[in-house]
Image 1 (cartoon, rainbow, N blue to C red):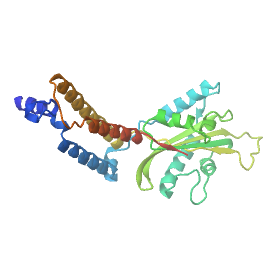
Image 2: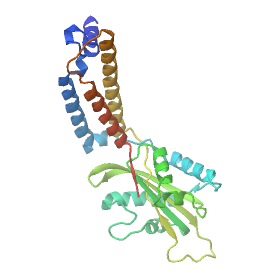
Image 3: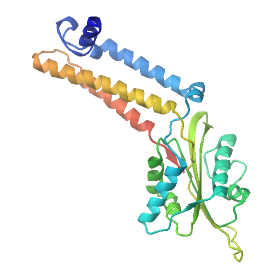
Image 4: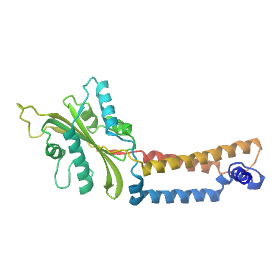
Length: 275
């Protein structure tokens, strides 16, 4: 127990035996941190690790539907009801994007969103599609759609739509593990209505089933790692001030920059894409 206490003391508290610099902030330790961060990046990029741990999402169909309808209610629009045929169309569209390796409303062989909707047995008067990928949370997906100027917001708030379907699918797209979210909107055709050649709008996002996530796991490790560095830095500054330690070449600025870059990396890892 005494050895552990001594080790922690050397690690965080500046004193004479560690040259008045916490061991965790020594230059050689920062090099080790960089090596560990690089290795973690390589490990979590490997597909087999992700296959074991799953994908990084806290996205669910229920939450997406709830958030979408909340946006409609805020704008005095009726809620959308779930439709199984539209959900099937969304699932088939997501699977096709993985199979054909594309990120677009239109497949390389010319399939349109409406082909998937009609193929699922849904005859529409109006139809639309939103797509998204690489988001961690349902809120992030819907917020991105609502802040978009490319038609996603218009789809969510389109008065003509009465039904919606979702799919959340994990797979490899362009060589990277990806979570796709697909949202298909529709209004079923009435027996007396003859649809025009084109009566649809697009904006992409795909739903996925929530699983234990390698990306979430990596994200949490980064948070712990950053908290460790912040604790070491704060204690170092506190004790240096308390004992009036004078350093000829302080490195606190470098440490702060190091932590800032980690924060930027964490922020970038939560940004997804919509089309």
